[in-house]
Every structure is written in C-alpha cells, then in structure tokens.
Length: 194
Length: 107
Image (cartoon, rainbow over all chains, first blue to last red; front, side, top):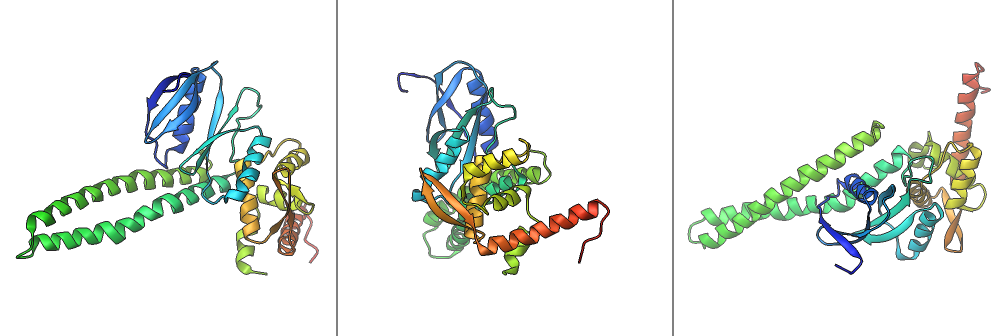
C-alpha cells in the first residue's frame, strides 16, 4: 500500500456485477473511504476522506479509438464527472450526489443501458463461448477417445481429460453467473425496473 | 433510403430525436445536452454515456457527420440521410399531435 492508503479490500465483481461494484464504491465513500486504486485480480485501495455521498459509475468503452478518447473524457468532464482510470476497458467516473437535484447517472435512457449490456456481452462473453465450443468441448471428446483407446498413453490422456473437465465446469459456472446476470439486468432495464 | 436504418430509427427515442433535431446546427455533445435541458425546461437531461453512445451510433449509421474539433470537443452536423429520417419522424409526431387533438391528418 502507498502511504496515504488506509484500507485494502478484496472483492470480486464479474462483468454482470458492475452495478453492484458502483454501489460498493459509493458505500465506501459514504463511510469515509475514497477509492483510489485497483489492482488485479480484485484489490480495492482506499484513502481516508470526509464521508460524502459520491456516485460511482462505470462505462464499458471497448469501441473508443485512441484519437477519440480526449473528446470522450471531455464530455464527462463537462457534465461534472471526475474521471479516475480504466480497468480492462471499463472507465471509472465519480460525481458528488449532494450538489445535484437528481441522482447523477451517465446512462439516462433504457436504450443506452441495454446497448451497454449488449456491448459487454459481445466483447466479453462471446469470446469465451467461442473458446468453449471450439476448444474445450473438442478436447474433451478427443481426450476421452484417447483414454479409452488401446495402446495409447492412458495416464497422459486422463490427466488432460481431468484438466479439461475442470475447465468445462469453470466455464459453465461463468456462463450461468455472467450470462444469467447480464440477462437479468437487461430484463430489468427493458421493464424499467432499474 | 435504406429500409434497415428506417426500421431502427423510427419511431425515435426521445433522446435520439432531440439529438438529431439539435444537430440541424453544428454542435458538440455537451452543447446538445445543455440545449435539450433548456428546450425541455430541465425535464430531459441526457447523461454523458447516453450522449456519447448515441452520437457514435448515429455517426456510424450515417445520420450525422463529424465536422471539426474544438478544444477537444468533436462537433457534428446532421447529414442528408439524417435529415430524411428526421423529417419522417417530425411528420409522425405532427400526426400524433393532431390526432390527439381530435383532428384528422391532412393526407
């Protein structure tokens, strides 16, 4: 920890939990801990500050070219958001809620919230779905074939099979959690519940 | 006009409509946010994320075009296609308004 940092919290938020992450950071700030740094895979560093209601918002900016970044950040600055940093294509912004009449938010209509989910899905879920069907599934089939075949190195095949089955289960967990989470968020946005 | 673009944009979202409507004049995103806020008596305040996403999408679809940059802010203006879409939408809203007042559309 750097000398000003007073607290480190370990939390894991997946791509389907960005709204929970925003809420978590807001609560910390309210309690007098301002978010200053993130470290992979899930360390949140805080500095002591005056307790304040500060809204944190995350934007997924996968499609922003380098030369467009200044314009992008300027728009947030103009609308009163403090830009913090990017973590894996997610930009972190914050703004004090105490001066605003309405709850500050970067996405103000249903369509743009759904658009965000679609972008996250395309960029983060699609690659792992492709890897799942093009790599893990074929490998499991291949290795189980090797394992049962006469005259092959059975131990070798079994070891790989176990690794791939574990990967298969991890992937399944990710699909269910993230896919389900994104789907629920999208439904909530569509129905105006969030 | 491309049918697909028409299907996507009509009817327009409130945000989409105001952005396109404002861009009949050259403007940047923050200009539009302020203008819309003023036009609607503070009722509609478009968020930065929503504004940025809408501008990118409309530019990609050819409804608006980048004109120039001014102190890091990109200025856009409506294109011919955008004007065509906006006019269709304006007619639709006009009809809606007339009908709501108990009048029939002219055509």
